[in-house]
Every structure is written in C-alpha cells, then in structure tokens.
Amino acid sequence: MMSPAPSPSPSPSSATVEGPVIALDDVVAVLGQFPALAGASLTVERGEIVLLRGPNGAGKTTLLRLCAGLLPVERGTATILGFDLSTQRELVRPHVGLLGHQNGLYLDLSVRENVNFWGRTVGASTDEIHAAMVRMGVAERLADIPCRKLSAGQKRRTSLACLVARRAQVWLLDEPHAGLDAAGRDELDATLAQAAASGATILVASHELERAGNLATRSVEVVAGQITALEGEK
Image (cartoon, rainbow, N blue to C red):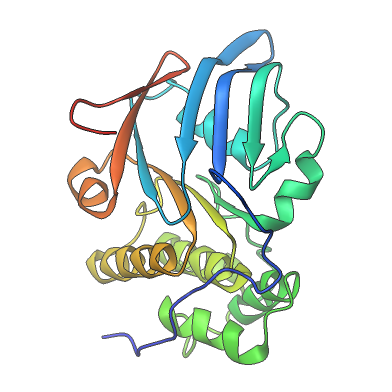
C-alpha cells in the first residue's frame, strides 16, 4: 500500500479565470489535409472531470492536444483559462499537463531527475516533488533508476508523478490507466479526484468506461470530430 501524500493542487502561480476553464465553439483543427475536429464545441468548468468517449480516430487525442496549445485552431473560437488558442497558445502551455500515449520521459535520466525537472519548471519545492513521487509509488527503490530500465507500468507511474509535480490547472489525459496495475489505477483515480476537488479541471479520454465513468462528473461523446453530450448528461 502506498504511503499517503498531500493532495495535488494547482500551482500558486495559477492563471485567474472568470467563466469556463475550457470554452470551444465550432472549432476546426486540421491534421495534414484532414479535419480531425470538425466543428467541435465544449464548455468545461473549474473542478470538473469530463470523460471523452468515442471510437479510435474520432478526434479525442486531437482535442486534448488542441487544449494543450499544441495544435492551431483553423476555425471557430477556443479559450483555455481565458487564453485565446488562436493567438496565445504558448501562454496556455505552462498551465496545462498533457499525458498522451507516449510517456514523455527522458529515458537516460532517473525517475527522480525526471520528476524534479518537470516540477522545477513550475517552481515546485523539493517536498512537493517528493510527495508526487510518493503518491505514484516511485519514491523509494525506483527513484534513482534510469527510466530506460523501467517496465511499462513503472514508466507510466513516473509520468503521472511528473504530472502531479507540475500542479497543472488543466489535466489532459489520454488513456491514463494504460500499463498500470490495479493498485496504480486506484491511486490514479484517487489522485484525479483530489486534484479536481482542489480546483483542477480534467479531460480524460478512455475506453475503460466503467472505471473512468465512475470517476467523471459527466461524459461527452466524440464522433467524427464533433462533440455531443450523452443522454442524461448536461
């Protein structure tokens, strides 16, 4: 059983937001010549956990990358934390944490060095960085092992520790439970719930609908680059 750690919370340098944290209206995003988002609209308030459902290729990953400021808006309007994604994408990036299919680790660095690097980018203290490692179970025997020597599950835990240490206001997660054992999945769920309770806003794309659905405050469907609310959802 993992040792308790303080709840993750947004950075003290958080952007001040009035209105929705995420506001997309008729957004089009193009990959190559293909409109991966084709008139997508979505509003998400502070503290929500929104599950993105839909088949592979529907646009879920594109939506997460757009919200992270990594893709341009071709048409429509989109703001994250009040920043306009058409003109201020670089200002969004320090305030969001994206965990995609790739873990985003420096494989020649140790677990501790990776988490320390990402934590220091937002001014996290040594105690906060250590707490993030404790929370995801990588603070002891794994701490000084190069990430290239880790198993898939250990790499996923390390990436999640980096995300916790970053104290992002917006968490963007693409199949975050992948590679984790049962204990790791439970710890991740508890971490996300506590982050949302502390004011973080979370989008999670997942095919594990029962687990992610129980965690989410609501679900939306992403199909053919468009977003629709599921029946019974707001």
